[in-house]
Image 1 (cartoon, rainbow, N blue to C red):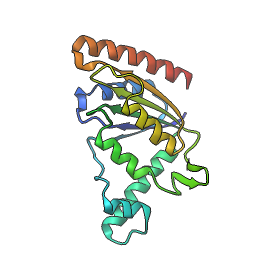
Image 2: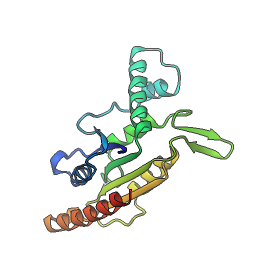
Image 3: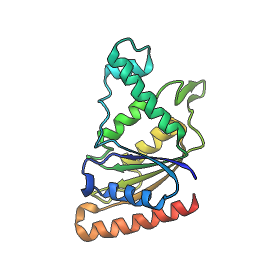
Image 4: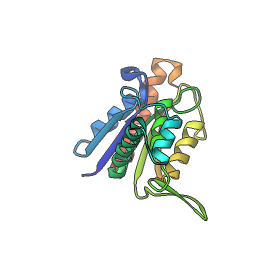
Length: 194
């Protein structure tokens, strides 16, 4: 049995194609220890100057201490996970702001990454990530969502990343059904190989 951290980030709830793929993945992972964090239903605070002070310095105010405690909780969940399953729909060419806030709260110097003479080094090696993407259009694999997810996961040391795409869902019901079926087949293949 492995520990799985699931991140949902779509604001569309049951109408979300990425959420449908996340739910399908959870169903297939029965028997694993699964923690689900729905970043749209229970959004994190916006990462502002107070949050930056809290997670990168010495928190002094009660608000800063609460934000550091939240960051510690998120980092602990991430450290405990063997595999991450991340729903990453494309909103206006990039990831949802809810997912961006999550990464802002977990990207912490000397906690999840460190700077070295050779550049940044991620401290969360040995984990796997499955990123479930839903795109309204037919974007190639070098889109901003894919590039950002590879970069930020690699920044914290997670380099074993596989992507599943449901592309062209903006073209209507038939396109959605076809995209979801193709994505579910890929998810099944990935999970079989885990």
